Every structure is written in structure tokens, then in C-alpha cells.
Image 1 (cartoon, helix red, strand yellow):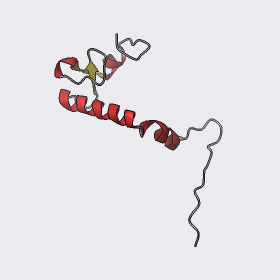
Image 2 (tube, one colour):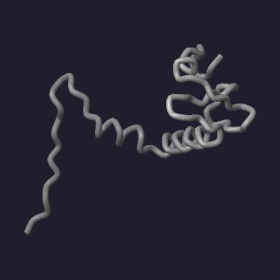
Image 3 (cartoon, helix red, strand yellow):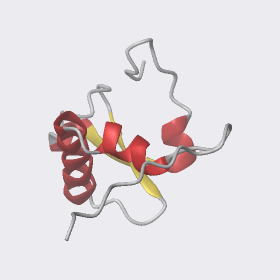
Image 4 (cartoon, helix red, strand yellow):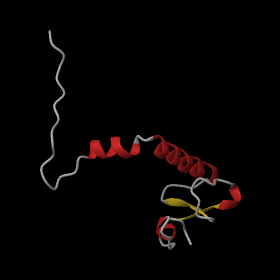
Length: 88
């Protein structure tokens, strides 16, 4: 009995391959570290559903209590950012 073959299906032009995007981006160790940091910030700040955690110094890995503030989602997305995605 032969082993099953893996079939690679290329999506039609204009269609996104979400599985490939996930494997190439979200599963990387640095992304897992960032996601864990975001989750820790949410837990530490006590943000509820529909609220975001604002890092005052713009560093998403700095989860000191004095650096975190709970704000609305629209407010958090309105802060201008520099080219390194840091809030100004």
C-alpha cells in the first residue's frame, strides 16, 4: 500500500490562500512571541471586549503596568505611527 500523496492546489488568480499565509506568518516564532505579549498586556490591563490596550511608549513588548492604558478600539487606531510602526 502506498502512502497518500499530498495534493497542492493553487488558488485561482485573485484568490487568497489563507492557509499558506497563516503558515508563512502566524506560525513563526517571532509572531508567537508578539501574540503572547499582546495577550499578556490584555490580561494585565483588564481590557474588556471592544477595548484595546494602548502602549504609551509605542513598544508592544513593554507590558509594564505604567505603560498600559485601556482605550476604545477607534481611539487606539487613531494614533499616528512612524515608519517603524511606533506610536508618536
